[in-house]
Length: 242
Image (cartoon, rainbow, N blue to C red; front, side, top):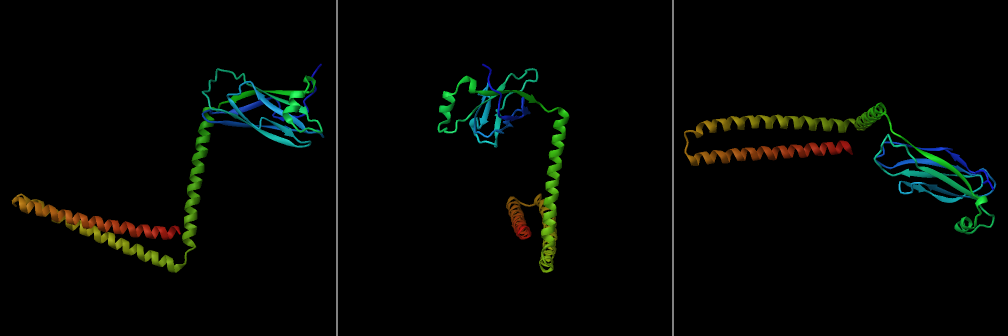
Protein backbone atom coordinates (compact mmCIF):
# COMPACT_ATOMS: atom_id res chain seq x y z
CA UNK A 1 0.00 0.00 0.00
CA UNK A 2 1.38 3.39 -1.01
CA UNK A 3 2.25 5.85 1.71
CA UNK A 4 0.12 9.00 2.03
CA UNK A 5 1.42 12.28 0.66
CA UNK A 6 3.45 14.48 2.98
CA UNK A 7 1.18 16.99 4.73
CA UNK A 8 4.03 19.23 5.94
CA UNK A 9 5.32 22.00 3.71
CA UNK A 10 9.12 22.04 3.53
CA UNK A 11 11.26 25.07 2.75
CA UNK A 12 13.54 24.31 0.97
CA UNK A 13 11.74 21.42 -0.66
CA UNK A 14 14.54 19.32 -2.16
CA UNK A 15 18.02 20.54 -1.16
CA UNK A 16 19.86 21.69 1.95
CA UNK A 17 22.68 23.99 0.85
CA UNK A 18 25.75 24.61 2.98
CA UNK A 19 28.10 27.44 2.06
CA UNK A 20 31.83 27.11 2.83
CA UNK A 21 34.54 27.47 3.84
CA UNK A 22 33.92 24.50 6.08
CA UNK A 23 36.56 25.25 8.69
CA UNK A 24 33.81 26.10 11.18
CA UNK A 25 30.24 25.01 11.84
CA UNK A 26 27.94 25.90 8.93
CA UNK A 27 24.23 26.21 9.69
CA UNK A 28 21.25 26.11 7.34
CA UNK A 29 17.58 26.34 8.26
CA UNK A 30 14.80 23.97 7.30
CA UNK A 31 11.29 25.35 7.77
CA UNK A 32 8.44 22.90 8.44
CA UNK A 33 4.89 24.27 8.14
CA UNK A 34 1.69 22.48 9.12
CA UNK A 35 -1.24 23.77 7.00
CA UNK A 36 -3.69 21.19 8.36
CA UNK A 37 -6.22 21.46 11.19
CA UNK A 38 -4.52 18.68 13.17
CA UNK A 39 -1.28 18.47 15.09
CA UNK A 40 1.54 16.67 13.28
CA UNK A 41 4.45 14.73 14.81
CA UNK A 42 7.76 14.96 12.95
CA UNK A 43 11.29 13.54 12.98
CA UNK A 44 14.35 14.69 11.03
CA UNK A 45 16.83 11.95 10.13
CA UNK A 46 20.12 11.91 8.19
CA UNK A 47 22.36 9.32 6.57
CA UNK A 48 25.40 10.93 8.29
CA UNK A 49 24.40 11.55 11.93
CA UNK A 50 28.02 12.18 13.04
CA UNK A 51 28.46 15.01 10.56
CA UNK A 52 25.35 16.99 11.48
CA UNK A 53 23.71 18.41 14.57
CA UNK A 54 19.93 18.94 14.17
CA UNK A 55 17.90 21.06 16.60
CA UNK A 56 15.10 20.18 17.11
CA UNK A 57 15.27 16.78 15.48
CA UNK A 58 11.73 15.78 16.54
CA UNK A 59 8.58 17.20 18.05
CA UNK A 60 4.99 18.21 17.39
CA UNK A 61 3.86 21.03 15.09
CA UNK A 62 0.51 22.49 16.09
CA UNK A 63 -2.20 22.98 13.50
CA UNK A 64 -1.65 26.04 11.31
CA UNK A 65 1.82 26.76 12.67
CA UNK A 66 5.42 26.21 11.57
CA UNK A 67 8.82 25.49 13.08
CA UNK A 68 12.41 26.23 12.06
CA UNK A 69 14.90 23.36 12.26
CA UNK A 70 18.60 24.29 12.47
CA UNK A 71 20.85 21.85 10.59
CA UNK A 72 24.50 22.37 11.64
CA UNK A 73 27.24 20.85 9.51
CA UNK A 74 30.37 20.11 11.54
CA UNK A 75 33.82 21.29 10.26
CA UNK A 76 35.59 18.99 7.78
CA UNK A 77 38.22 18.99 5.01
CA UNK A 78 36.36 19.94 1.84
CA UNK A 79 37.23 18.07 -1.36
CA UNK A 80 35.67 19.66 -4.50
CA UNK A 81 36.06 16.37 -6.41
CA UNK A 82 34.00 14.46 -3.88
CA UNK A 83 30.24 14.69 -4.40
CA UNK A 84 28.07 14.77 -1.33
CA UNK A 85 26.01 11.66 -0.77
CA UNK A 86 24.43 12.91 2.44
CA UNK A 87 20.66 12.94 2.58
CA UNK A 88 17.98 14.04 5.04
CA UNK A 89 14.50 12.66 5.55
CA UNK A 90 11.59 14.42 7.24
CA UNK A 91 9.18 11.86 8.60
CA UNK A 92 5.73 12.80 9.90
CA UNK A 93 2.40 11.42 11.03
CA UNK A 94 -0.90 12.89 12.16
CA UNK A 95 -1.09 13.07 15.93
CA UNK A 96 -4.16 11.41 17.53
CA UNK A 97 -6.49 13.82 19.38
CA UNK A 98 -5.83 12.18 22.75
CA UNK A 99 -2.03 11.93 22.38
CA UNK A 100 -0.08 11.99 25.65
CA UNK A 101 3.11 10.12 24.72
CA UNK A 102 4.86 11.11 21.51
CA UNK A 103 7.28 8.19 21.53
CA UNK A 104 4.40 5.81 22.06
CA UNK A 105 2.62 7.23 19.02
CA UNK A 106 5.70 6.61 16.85
CA UNK A 107 6.09 3.09 18.22
CA UNK A 108 2.47 2.19 17.55
CA UNK A 109 2.27 3.87 14.12
CA UNK A 110 1.58 1.69 11.11
CA UNK A 111 3.77 1.99 7.99
CA UNK A 112 0.82 3.32 5.98
CA UNK A 113 0.41 6.16 8.48
CA UNK A 114 3.94 7.49 7.99
CA UNK A 115 4.73 10.30 5.55
CA UNK A 116 8.23 11.29 4.48
CA UNK A 117 10.13 13.76 2.34
CA UNK A 118 13.77 13.47 1.29
CA UNK A 119 16.34 16.22 0.76
CA UNK A 120 19.90 16.00 -0.51
CA UNK A 121 22.84 18.04 0.80
CA UNK A 122 24.76 20.44 -1.46
CA UNK A 123 28.10 22.02 -0.52
CA UNK A 124 28.93 25.42 -2.05
CA UNK A 125 32.49 26.71 -1.85
CA UNK A 126 32.79 30.47 -2.62
CA UNK A 127 34.97 31.39 -5.59
CA UNK A 128 38.24 33.32 -5.14
CA UNK A 129 36.73 36.57 -6.38
CA UNK A 130 33.91 36.22 -3.87
CA UNK A 131 36.48 35.73 -1.10
CA UNK A 132 38.25 38.91 -2.23
CA UNK A 133 34.94 40.78 -2.21
CA UNK A 134 34.22 39.57 1.32
CA UNK A 135 37.68 40.74 2.48
CA UNK A 136 37.12 44.17 0.92
CA UNK A 137 33.72 44.39 2.57
CA UNK A 138 35.31 43.63 5.93
CA UNK A 139 37.91 46.37 5.36
CA UNK A 140 35.18 48.89 4.47
CA UNK A 141 33.26 47.90 7.59
CA UNK A 142 36.37 48.42 9.74
CA UNK A 143 36.98 51.86 8.20
CA UNK A 144 33.36 52.86 8.82
CA UNK A 145 33.66 51.86 12.47
CA UNK A 146 36.88 53.87 12.80
CA UNK A 147 35.28 56.95 11.23
CA UNK A 148 32.22 56.69 13.47
CA UNK A 149 34.50 56.46 16.51
CA UNK A 150 36.37 59.60 15.39
CA UNK A 151 33.10 61.46 14.87
CA UNK A 152 31.88 60.46 18.32
CA UNK A 153 35.09 61.81 19.87
CA UNK A 154 34.65 65.07 18.00
CA UNK A 155 31.02 65.38 19.06
CA UNK A 156 32.03 64.70 22.65
CA UNK A 157 34.63 67.45 22.50
CA UNK A 158 32.14 69.88 20.95
CA UNK A 159 29.67 69.20 23.76
CA UNK A 160 32.14 70.59 26.33
CA UNK A 161 31.66 74.21 27.39
CA UNK A 162 34.12 76.96 26.49
CA UNK A 163 35.53 77.10 30.01
CA UNK A 164 36.62 73.45 29.95
CA UNK A 165 38.10 73.83 26.48
CA UNK A 166 40.06 76.90 27.60
CA UNK A 167 41.44 75.05 30.62
CA UNK A 168 42.54 72.13 28.47
CA UNK A 169 44.18 74.42 25.93
CA UNK A 170 46.08 76.21 28.70
CA UNK A 171 47.18 72.87 30.13
CA UNK A 172 48.39 71.77 26.69
CA UNK A 173 50.41 74.97 26.30
CA UNK A 174 51.93 74.46 29.73
CA UNK A 175 52.88 70.90 28.81
CA UNK A 176 54.41 72.08 25.54
CA UNK A 177 56.50 74.61 27.48
CA UNK A 178 57.57 71.88 29.90
CA UNK A 179 58.55 69.59 27.04
CA UNK A 180 60.61 72.37 25.47
CA UNK A 181 62.33 73.01 28.80
CA UNK A 182 63.16 69.33 29.17
CA UNK A 183 64.58 69.28 25.64
CA UNK A 184 66.85 72.22 26.45
CA UNK A 185 67.97 70.55 29.67
CA UNK A 186 68.62 67.35 27.79
CA UNK A 187 70.67 69.23 25.22
CA UNK A 188 72.68 70.96 27.95
CA UNK A 189 73.30 67.64 29.71
CA UNK A 190 74.54 66.11 26.46
CA UNK A 191 76.93 69.03 25.97
CA UNK A 192 78.15 68.64 29.55
CA UNK A 193 78.59 64.91 29.00
CA UNK A 194 80.66 65.58 25.88
CA UNK A 195 82.85 67.99 27.81
CA UNK A 196 83.32 65.46 30.60
CA UNK A 197 84.23 62.77 28.07
CA UNK A 198 86.92 64.97 26.58
CA UNK A 199 88.30 65.78 30.01
CA UNK A 200 88.23 62.12 31.03
CA UNK A 201 91.21 61.35 28.80
CA UNK A 202 93.48 63.42 31.06
CA UNK A 203 91.73 62.76 34.38
CA UNK A 204 92.39 59.93 36.79
CA UNK A 205 90.08 56.94 37.43
CA UNK A 206 88.37 58.45 40.55
CA UNK A 207 87.47 61.54 38.57
CA UNK A 208 86.07 59.34 35.74
CA UNK A 209 83.78 57.44 38.11
CA UNK A 210 82.54 60.77 39.49
CA UNK A 211 81.59 61.91 35.97
CA UNK A 212 79.68 58.71 35.41
CA UNK A 213 77.72 59.24 38.62
CA UNK A 214 76.86 62.79 37.58
CA UNK A 215 75.68 61.51 34.17
CA UNK A 216 73.48 58.85 35.82
CA UNK A 217 71.95 61.47 38.10
CA UNK A 218 71.17 63.64 35.06
CA UNK A 219 69.53 60.72 33.27
CA UNK A 220 67.49 59.83 36.38
CA UNK A 221 66.13 63.37 36.62
CA UNK A 222 65.14 63.28 32.95
CA UNK A 223 63.36 59.94 33.39
CA UNK A 224 61.42 61.24 36.41
CA UNK A 225 60.41 64.39 34.51
CA UNK A 226 59.16 62.32 31.53
CA UNK A 227 57.16 60.02 33.84
CA UNK A 228 55.48 63.06 35.43
CA UNK A 229 54.75 64.48 31.97
CA UNK A 230 53.14 61.22 30.73
CA UNK A 231 51.06 61.03 33.92
CA UNK A 232 49.66 64.54 33.36
CA UNK A 233 48.88 63.74 29.69
CA UNK A 234 47.08 60.56 30.77
CA UNK A 235 44.94 62.54 33.22
CA UNK A 236 43.93 64.98 30.48
CA UNK A 237 43.05 62.15 28.06
CA UNK A 238 41.01 60.53 30.81
CA UNK A 239 39.05 63.77 31.31
CA UNK A 240 38.32 63.94 27.58
CA UNK A 241 37.10 60.32 27.56
CA UNK A 242 34.71 61.02 30.45
